[in-house]
Image (tube, rainbow, N blue to C red):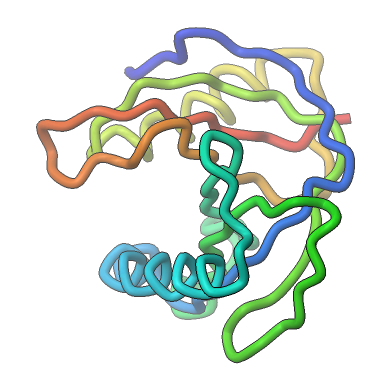
Length: 163
């Protein structure tokens, strides 16, 4: 089983994001994700929202795949933006923010290890620790660019909302 290099606790205070939501199975999301990220980056570029070495890219998981039918799973591609940015929602682009306390698993992953990393965070860490899950969305934050093939690896942080 894959294990994180470390697990930390982090509190986010109104981390402002733009996002595009996808509805469907995780397999379908993976097929569409590059197109969705391209649309998100195009909007951010046109609106001067990208700050080099500061902007972060996320994938947000709005639903529990053990409860929600896979055709109705909501998954969002997202990007952090400056808190003082004025953004008008347009087309598929939505605006939101993320706040609260999170357990953060810091991983170095290949493309095929993401599921195992999520399983570790919930099964090995959250449910075997005194931490309690909070009703908010978990997400991946890509520290480095996600792997484009099964040989490459990248640094990814998995954020689990906790009390």
